[in-house]
Image 1 (cartoon, rainbow, N blue to C red):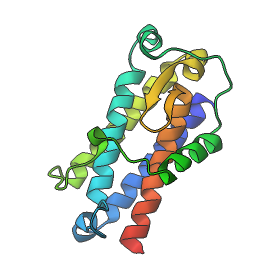
Image 2 (cartoon, rainbow, N blue to C red; image 1 turned 180 degrees about the vertical axis):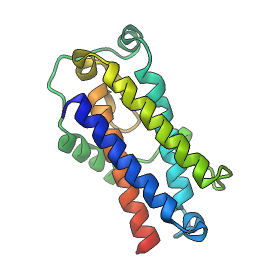
Image 3 (cartoon, rainbow, N blue to C red; image 1 turned 60 degrees about the vertical axis):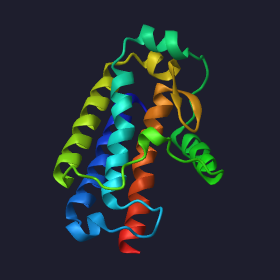
Image 4 (cartoon, one colour; image 1 turned 45 degrees about the vertical axis):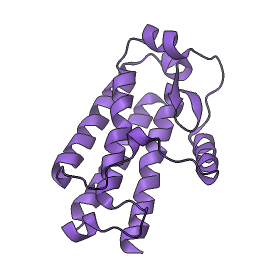
Length: 175
């Protein structure tokens, strides 16, 4: 996928997630399926926490990203390859680092959090589109489970990440 296709996919998937959240009753939104499992409010908050640093990093000067994390000259993993690697890490027990774990009680409203998430996705997509293709496919940044991956691979991960939470949330709320 190229940058335009990736940004369209991100907007679509995050939009579908937000639409699903909006249609939940307040009871379903706050329902805890079981101890240790997140409710819909926490899934939503987690995605906000996960996208915020992406917006920050992708808007840094390319020279700053390269100086801090480096650059590679290799073929980027495809969406499917990246997804498979991420699922392996999850099966091995990979969990969200503490800074991405939502609090037990989410005080922000559903509306405020969904608006914040979609604003972040718009900013993230704008940052992706401003990057030169060579930088998008060669600059590295750290992923908590996958290590150093390219900006393009991180965008693939952001796309799968929302899908992962959307699918898990539908199962817990509807299953």
